Every structure is written in C-alpha cells, then in structure tokens.
Length: 349
Ligand code: SF4
Image (cartoon, rainbow, N blue to C red; front, side, top):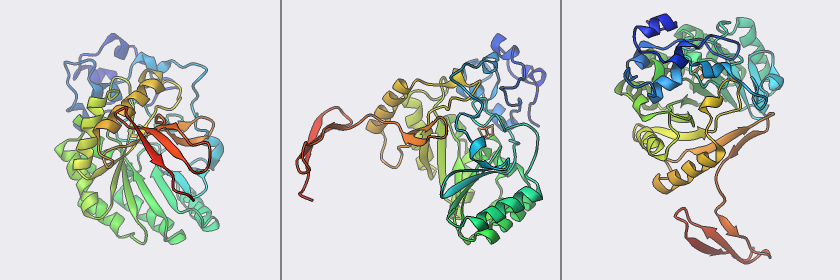
C-alpha cells in the first residue's frame, strides 16, 4: 500500500513544519509514496535526499515570473493532448498521467497526476495514423506519467498497434518503476516487450541517488538487460539530493557496474513550483568538470539543459579550447580536465 496523505505519512515520519504546511495546489503533483521507497528513507533525517524527492513541502506552492508550467513549450508542439512532436525524427507519447509515486521535482507537472488515466483507444489509433503519415519518425518515447502503470495486456495492445503502423520504430520505455516499485518489473512484462521486437526497445530509468540502487531495483533492470533491452539513466541535478561530485560519482559508477549507462544529467527545467530543487548553472558546471576528472567516458553522463521556449537540448560544459588558430592550418591550444594545456597541430585539409 502506498502512502497518499500527510496523515498517513505522519505515522511513518516525523514531519517538519515545512512539510506539514504543504497543501495540494495548482503547482503540485499528488502525494503518493510507495512502500518500497518509503522503506529506503531514513526517518530520523529531515534532510534525507530520498525524502526530499517525494515528501512535499510548502516551497512547491511558490513560483516566480521566470518559471512556467510548460517552459519547454510541449503543449504548442503537440498533436492532440498526448503526442509531443518537437524534434523531426522523434515523438513522445504520454500514455498516461498516472505514476506509482510522484516526484516533487516532476517537470511535466502540468500533465502528471491529473487523474485522467491511460490514453483512450481513439488516442492510440490517432497516434498510429500520425506515425503512418510521417514515416521519418524513427523513435518514440513511451512516457507520461509512467507508462508501466498500464497493465501488461494494455501495453501489449498499444505497442502492437504502434509496431503495425511503424515496424521499425525504436521505442524508449521511460519509467521510474525500478526505483519506486521494482516488483512491477516481471519476466512476463519483459517477455511481452520482446514479442514486439521488429525494432529495438531501450529502457530509460531515472535514478537520482546511489541509495536508490537497491538489490530489487538492480534485479528489475537486469530483467530488461538480460533480455537484450539496454538500460540508460537520466538523472536530474537536484539541490539537496545529488548536487555534489561525490554523490554523483558513486551513482554513475554504481549504474555502470549494474549495466545502466549514465546518459543524461539534466539541469532542472524552469518549471513552476520547483525552484527549491534548482542548482545554479555555475555550480552545475563545476560539478560536471569534477566528474569529468573522476569518471570514465562510459560512466560520464552528459550534463544538459533543455532550453526554454522549445529551444531544445544543449550540453553544458566549459570549453576546453583555449585558442584556435587564425588560419585554416595551425595549432589549437587546449585545456586538459586537470587544468594543464596541450597543443594539437591541425593537418593540412
Ligand atoms: S515518475 Fe516521472 S512523470 Fe512521474 S512524477 Fe516522477 S518525474 Fe514525474
């Protein structure tokens, strides 16, 4: 049973004044914490990084002019309510707005947790015809909400329709279930995906802290990886959760060891009600530089910002070019991650 109210939560954790004064409002997602995740929280630490991700506070009822409910302009890049088409070759399908547990930093809170439920048959058929009409779409993010809140049978039906419309469509399964409720991931679920293998699936997870990498979570991801479905992780850089190089180093190495590629480290979007999680770009880039010194290329995620007004994703890292040559042929001066300099002399092109 998940905890869904402050009254229930008070019986499990001693709530702070800020947590007790949370009221569900237009800027917030519902309160829902799974038993698995609650069991990972240290009840004696009000600043526990896992608690911070799921226990609401009054801070999320605040917003300023620099924030917006939809800073990435997903709505104006949408075909209908549930299909976002922002980049030419890929779409994101919001299969449901429901999640097994709600993250306080959720960037899609304009949609998530509105209790609309799964996409209708009509929505699914409309997406299928959109895929047929736009054959250059090669990838779909199956997202939400959390698409794995749908039953195996519902997912089987939906994916069958998408595969029929576009047999070579690569599908990214975007889910936080391995973190929030790993027992949802079963052999039967993975076997269902494998039955639709005319094109690859990728599992996209969101581990934000090394303590989320439990034996149960690792087992859940392994079921996918063992079945030939690669796992990639997208963390969010969150103040008070993982905004230091030591925590992220441990997380990225732990992910890699468990066959989950650290893919993105996202700068928090300018979403209304999430400012208390946001890390400054300056600090984020300092952490990125430190991680670059410590991690292997495989373990290193790309620190990335999704630019406002639908500007798209850009990597955030300091420049390693100190001086480029004046002419086409010449010497380039670089800074190494350790702060030394090196020269590459360009061959004649
Ligand atoms: S699982 Fe994803 S969609 Fe659901 S609340 Fe967390 S961040 Fe938002």
